[in-house]
Image 1 (cartoon, rainbow, N blue to C red):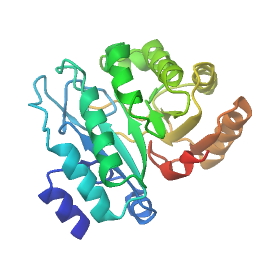
Image 2: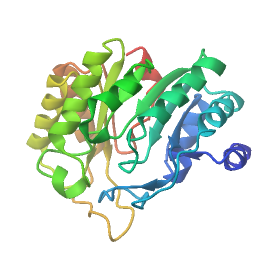
Image 3: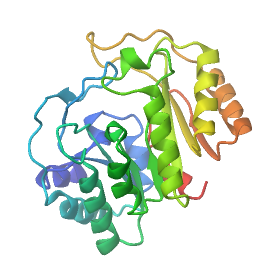
Image 4: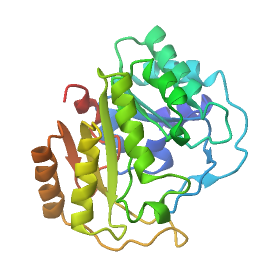
Length: 265
């Protein structure tokens, strides 16, 4: 409760609490939290996501990076994950705010490891470069679903563009671990999941998360199946065989679950 009060006072959002993540207590106890920068209004309206949409979310808060770094210190974090809503309204797609946050953490908490979970920046490689130049330990961009379902599920995003973003990020900074995640239960077939895993490996993705999609409201895309723990285990074994160096796969897995373990993976 004190941490939530502190974050409220600092006008910071965490995906952990905003999404009522079932793993929040475990992750915070292990010293990992996921901050959502650039506000809580998104310029896209994906059919799986509960974040509110708005074409004009508002100006960039230039003090946010300093507050984020200071809050991470007060929380005693070891690993900081930074994500954001999509900001297609901004000239740089929000990339400079990611860079500012990484710079602030380097200044104030160089002992912390960092991870970014970025939107696709509409495929702009210059905006991508702004983020990769700051050397986050892990670079994450979620594929979210299989090729066939991507146009229905992901507003404004493209399957191939996401794959290219991951590959380009790795080319620009080979020292980073690259990472992506897929939700299961959206209507995909198992062979389509296998295809997506192969596509990710072919585009230099190192780490993988697989979790169960849960429908936030009746407007959102329906759940087509609940994948069993055994099935998640089978997908994990396949992912390891394909060469992913770190895999988290299970019904309650989310993008940042056990994120701190991936730094060494």
